[in-house]
Length: 181
Image (spheres, rainbow, N blue to C red):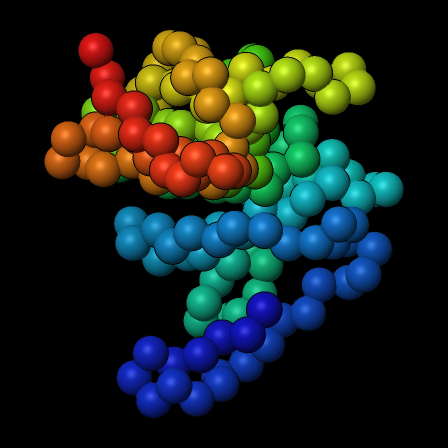
């Protein structure tokens, strides 16, 4: 990780993960203005199921690792200080405690929408090996309960917080727009 000053755009320092710790790589990071910390998804490795690492921007070091029960890729932070991973694991961002796992959701990229207080998980529709994809899973960000699935295969998505429309790119079709009923 490289730390760059937003004032001068100069490199302030670097932190390098040991090769044994990063497994398949690092994924999404989020900034928490309440804790003044970065959080970064660390995918599973031979030694770990994955984690969310808490990064201190002053010391440029990992302060702690929140052990995940699954391999997180996408990561969002909600106003209620929930860190939600793309594999459904939810952590309290302040304490670091696990709040639980929302079963049946998966994805790589996820999106938190403040307009409806839901988290959207982009995933495929169909079966791949033993994995069954339902498309875009919609989860209540307060209760972490699965609400519904939108049958759209996607890796990426976006949600407009003003009208809660869900935008899903579809190969060969363009962007499909879904509205809540």
